[in-house]
Image (tube, rainbow, N blue to C red; front, side, top):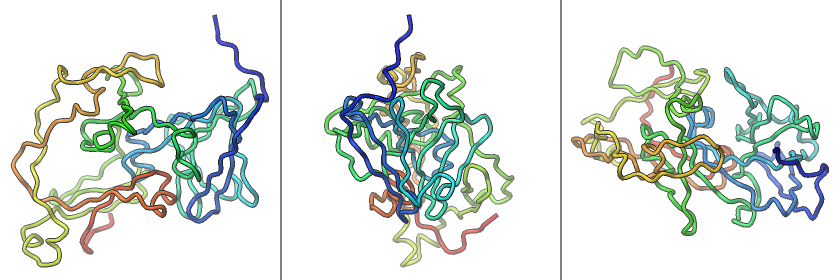
Length: 302
């Protein structure tokens, strides 16, 4: 027995939601049946989202059946957005051509029942964020090797648990949490590599040194903290969360946002990092929180 799709066009009433990037070159509305509210939001921590956005995760909202963005002139997909597709992609990711803000993803095939494209947009660029309109449901692909991450720091919203979800290693989707761009051979292991998903932008940062720690100004941007332990998380202390986006059985050893390995190694110098929640960062990245660090001027572009 198959579920019948609702009639198209959808019956009202509707609520119109408005989204804009920072430079306002990208401007669109979505007309959503009120019966579909609140819209579900999934925080995706997969490697592709992290390396294409330069953020800890993406804030993804799949639009309901039969709903797609209505771009406000002169804004349009063709004139305002730059697309990016990686190997084996099923969606094309779109970013504002002017300010770089992530806008969303469009499926590569039209829905045959509506003749419309499937869209997943970022909830962060809309003009309203209340829980009657958008509701965060899960942390997808919260890879333990990137902890602490936003799944660690945001286990709940207003007392409601945000469930983490990871597939088993045998699930083909598990590669999304671990895949990284090709890395060049770095002759100097005292430098850290940073790069985007396609590898078109690459640079290195020096690891903190004792000379920086002794400097009256540079030392302000360093902290001493323990290094991560090599011990794996204990499966007996994790929660077996159920995915809200997949019928595939989840991996109990990695499903809990609290299953990260504590940093218990010897102390080492680390660069100060911060999370910025300002409007400018939100509307230039397409995410609610942007992580950054303070780098010396002698960073090196490869």
